[in-house]
Structures are given as C-alpha cells and as structure tokens.
Image (cartoon, rainbow, N blue to C red; front, side, top):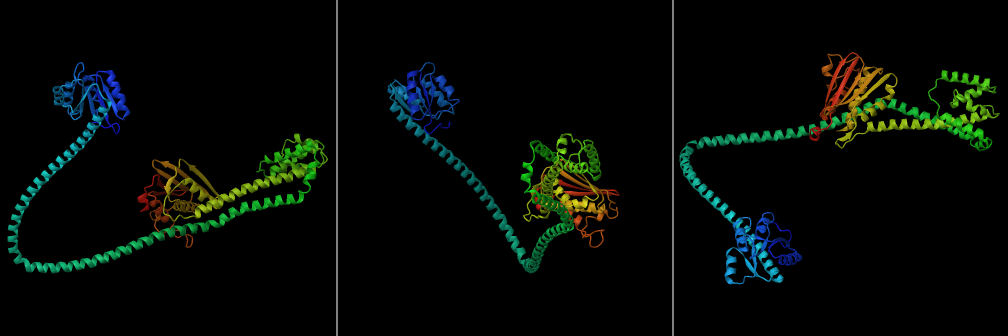
Amino acid sequence: MSGLANEKGIILIVDDTPASLGILFEFLSDFGFRVLVAENGESALNKVKYALPDLILLDVLMPGIDGFETCRRLRASPATQDIPVIFMTALSETVDKIRGLTFGAVDYITKPIDAEEVLARVTVHLSLRQITKRLKEQNERLEQEIKERDRAESALKKLTLELERRVEERTAEISYSNQLLAQSNQMLQQEIAERLQAEAELERSRSSLQTKAELLEQALSELQRTQAQIILSEKMTALGQLIAGVAHEVNNPVGAIRSSVVNISEFLTENLKQLPEFFQGLSKERQQDFFALLQKSTQQTPSLSSKEKRQFKRDLQHQLELQSIKNAESLASTLVNIGVYDNIQPFLPLLKDPDSEKILKTAYQFATVQRSTITITAATEKATKIVSALKTYARYDHSGSKVQANIIEEIETVLILYHNQIKHGVEVIKNYGESPSIPCYPDELNQVWTNLIHNALQAMNNKGTLMIDVTRQAENLLVSITDNGKGIPPEIMPRIFEPFFTTKPPGEGSGLGLDIVNNIVAKHQGKIEVSSKPGNTTFTVSLPINLNQETSNG
C-alpha cells in the first residue's frame, strides 16, 4: 500500500501518445498531484513494482500489452488489485466499456480527453479510494474484534463448564465438611480465641519494634551529626595547633612589607624635593651612567653572603685605587650594594667625576627603592598564598554534595599550613604522577592529609624526611605518605584505627585521628593500608577515580 507524496496523491498515466501524456502530466501536476508516466503496459507493470500509485489513467489501445490485459494483470496482483483504474479510449461502444469494467476498471474517459473531466473523475475516485481504504481498515479491525470476541466467548464457555464442574465437586466437599465442622466447631472456637490473643500480642510486639526503629533512626541521625561535628572539631583542633606557625609565616612577609615601606618612605621624604635639581644637574653621559647602574641593580644576585660581599669590596677597592680614584673604599662599598661586582670599566668615567659619590649614593637609594618594591610584591604573594590555604582548609561544605577536586592541590594546601613546622628540619620529597580530578568531599579529604602529615611529623619529632607519592593505578588514585621516624610497634599495629586508642601522653591526642581518617576513606569507597618498620612508615590511601554516588552517600 503506497503512501501519499502529498495531500493530492500519486497518479500513474499510461499512454503511448506523448502529446496526451504531456497535457495530462502538466495539468495534473499544476493541481498538486505527483504524476508518474509510462508509455506502454509493460512499462506500467514494472513501474508499480517500485512506486505504488493511488490511481491509474490507462489507455486501452497500445502496442504490445493493451489496456485490458494490463488492467487484468494489475487486478491479479495482491499489491495492485485495489488501485482504481480509469480507462482512456476512443472506443465508445457500450460493449467495450462493459469489457473494460469486467477487467476491473472503475470508470471510462472517452478521447479526445477533456482535462476538466479528467480532474473531476480523478478527484472523485481518489476520494472513493480513501473512503474505501478507511472502510477496509475499519472492517479489518471489526473482523479482528469479532474474532477476539469469539475466542473470548469460547474461553468463557469453557471456563463456565469448568466452574460448574468445580461447583459440583465443591458442593460435595462442603457437604462432607459440614459434617466435620459440627464435630470441630468447639475446637475451632478455642483456636480462634488463642489466635486473637496471639494477634494482640503480635500487635504489641509490632508497636514496640516500630518504636525501637524510630529510636534507632534518631540515634543514627544523631551519630551522623556527631561524626560531622567530630571531623569539624578535629579540623579546628589541628588548625589551632597550626595557627601559631601560620601567624609566624604571615608575620614574616608583613614585616618585610613594613620594612620596605619604611625604606621607600624615608627615601621619598629625604630626596623628593632634591630629585628634580639632581637630574637637571646631570650631564647626558652621567644620566646614561645613572640608569645603567639602576639596570645593573635589577640584575643583582640577591643571595650573596657577607663574606662574598667583603671579597668583592676588596677587589673593587683595589681596581679603583689602580685608577687613582679617590674615596675608593666608600665607592667600592656602594658599588657592591648596587650590584656592580667585577667589571667597572663601563663606569670609570662616572667614578672619576667629582660628583661620583653623590651620583652613586642616589643610585643606591633608587636601587634600594626598587628592591623594596620587589620585596613587597614577593611578600604579598606569600601572604596571599598562606591566607588562601588557611581559608581553603578552614572551610566546611555542609551541602553534602561531592565536587571535582585535584588531590595534589589539596595536599599542597596542607603543606603550606605546615611550612613553619617543616622548614626547620624536615625534607619534603614530592613524587607527583598523573592525578586527574576526582568526585569527592575535599574538606573531609583535607582532614585525612592533615592527620597523616601531622602524625608523620610527630613520629620524626619534626626532623627527617617526609615523602609524598601520588600515582594513578588503573581506576584508582594512590596517595602514599612516608616518614623515616621510629615506626609503629607490631603489637599495637592492629589497634591504630580503633577510636580513642592513642600512645601519646594525655592532652596530646584524642585517639580519633586515624579513626576519622579510616571513616572518611571508607565514605569515599576507598581503603587505607599501612606498613611500618623502624625508619620507614607508609600510609597508603586508595581512592576510586569514578566514585559511585549512591554508595558514597550511604
């Protein structure tokens, strides 16, 4: 059954006269029909195999297979037997029309063809075609419903007979049961009384169990809140232990900033009014020398020891004396402070100038201002980094939702906060491999890294080697924290994750640190392992890269 190309439908015109084909093709196409053409019966039969039309205009008199035979073959095929066929012919005898209708045609159009008549007949028969299709579909549905109803009635009849048989059997059984019922009625009443008593007892038990379940749910909720509070308390405790060191780390850059600001302020206070006069008094050559000194100052190596500076001063003083330059000792000291250590050849004209000492002193003051601004920038960046780490560590997300986080960045945050304890005797070795961001609770994992690093530093008495390895292993991220402290005795190894178990003196530990670590790692569907011997203790945390949402929330 063909589908319509548009609202009007598909029409196949079969005619061996090109002129007739052309007229009908253009006329019907203009009215929105999709028109197919064939010049003989064989071509028409082949064409309908690939595109089924909704109506066929068929010429009767054609070479080869004529219209009557073509119509007969169309009616013989199940695929085309329902397509309406309108004959077009110059035969006007009644017997010819009857013959065409006998072969299955639905109408006749007499040549010469009137286009308006063709349009009217085509429109009518296409409408009848659609009505026939709908009626056929309705009849098919109705026949299907009738078949289904017949099947249902047959099944119902069988079921009725079966029910009647069962009723007869049941009636006989009931008759026999009634005899037994009279004998067991007293026993049944006693059983009913016992059952009612048992049901009452069951109801009391069910009520008791429901009460216990509600209490258990409340206890579980309270336990979860308590666990969150313990983690937060442990974090605040660790933060309290770190705060003195963090304050010291912040005070260092603040002190550097304060000192640099004082240098700049003193320079501006003492020299601001004299600077215009100073620069106006410089010749073009001395101006070039002045700015060359400032450029040299920006390239100064900042880490010269006092011994190195004294050696450079002696060398420069000797060179200046060889050039018969006055005040060689003072000039050499100023040159070294500016950053001129060895090659003084480009500055000899300046150094021989009568105002050389004044020019060098002013250049040194400017260089000091430059270095002060660099110091302020570095100190500001360091303080900002420390404050940012402190803010990151102190946060706590109460939403309960996981976020994507980079584990290495979180570990670095903790290391920044421990920098004051680390810098006085701990070498930190970082072996960071591939570390994709993972869905996690970063605030809680920060507590894991804090506790493990804190324990490692305590195990080494803040002197030794701390090694941190981050690697990817298949679908897991491994974080190993190793110290070279005294190790964990084998006899207490099985108990280190027990809550409230500690080997530290009273007041130095709650015994909850590793228990919290273990619970947080388990919440992330990970695992923690430990190996220890004197001089080498390693805690390894394994975290899945793709964390299951439902399990982790549980």
